[in-house]
Length: 195
Image (cartoon, rainbow, N blue to C red; front, side):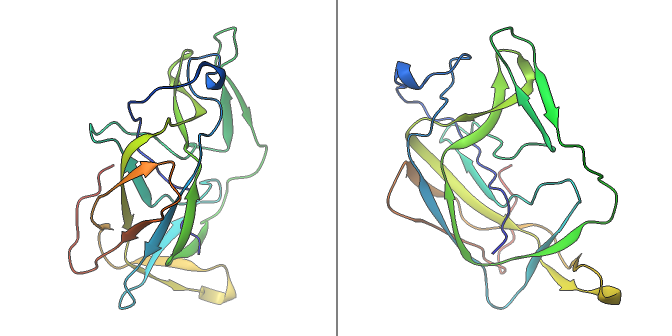
């Protein structure tokens, strides 16, 4: 399964221990994990066309009951950091981002989330750095785009979309948790993604 990087939209209200707080007052270590059990319909196929430097597609969205969102994927192959100096720094991979990318099927399977997300830092709202969500209550939703994969001229797979993004129901869960969170996708009821 290549569901890609998880997109988690959440920041729960919860107590944070001082030893887990980083320079910016955010958690710098995971408080645990949760597993998302993803189920796609057997009667329809879903896929993504992933750009050469996109880093993967995001399908799982997590939010707090208040609707606060967290971005679980970095926007590029650049890693941002916000040291004590308060200056946003970036380290980027020196690779070529030319080409059409590659198609990837979205299938059923399990994905584990450690609470990591990319959020604004004390360096500013545009300096997104990896941090961790605190323990608390969240809501998850699974979204994907209907499509078919083909391999033209024996090249890499290509995804051709056949419909609009479809989303399953929003499912409340506690983080961290040993109980898997079941996320389904109903091809009969397209929904607007909570992104």
